[in-house]
Length: 250
Image (cartoon, rainbow, N blue to C red; front, side):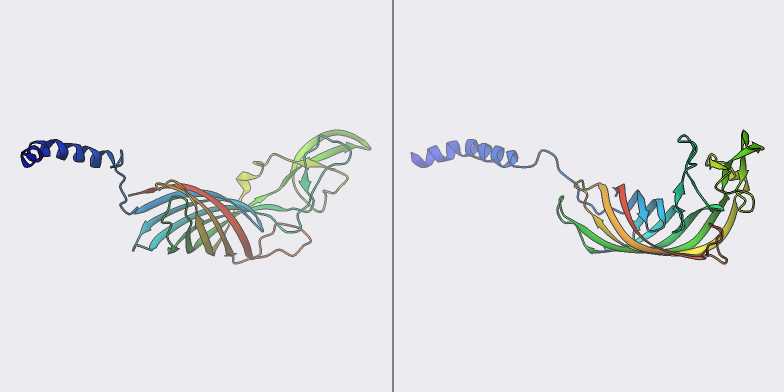
């Protein structure tokens, strides 16, 4: 009789067991396929100024990625100091003795290698990357607002390209708009090399948040005339820190 009861209730027990097991499965099945591509950008601060960067990677092996980098950096001379016209609080700051503004546009190819992979959502992934390639130096003349006198009386203000022979602390009112002189920009072709350590800490598997610390060197065939009466350089070295955001794709 007991055996008959067990046989009779077996289908019901099997149904209950299946329901319990099914209820323990996650509501959403997650795919853990390896990501093949990454696209991310960042803003960096370095010992020469600041910059914007774009990165693209594609897996070559499980731990090595091909890397493409595009960097735009605003480069400042270490002797740059902003001052104001002391006669007017509304005047714009300027750098006395600055001949040209200087920026670089770098396009590089390289690799990114993972040393410690991020295995948990709140983990940390450590990678190293390097890239080399051409660099285009952008040299734009500095324009200033210059006071015009009739004797000792100020009769107007004119925008003029900075000339150390005729412009001084007595007649410089302030800097002209930043776009002034853009049509007179000159180019300096060169090259660069870059190395960084990348710490990725994103809590989302598809997202990318990282902090990169590294060093970079840019070389040009001649000295870049940023300042007057001060030695200028043709080799620029820097240490940088870059905060990065992006996304990964399968």
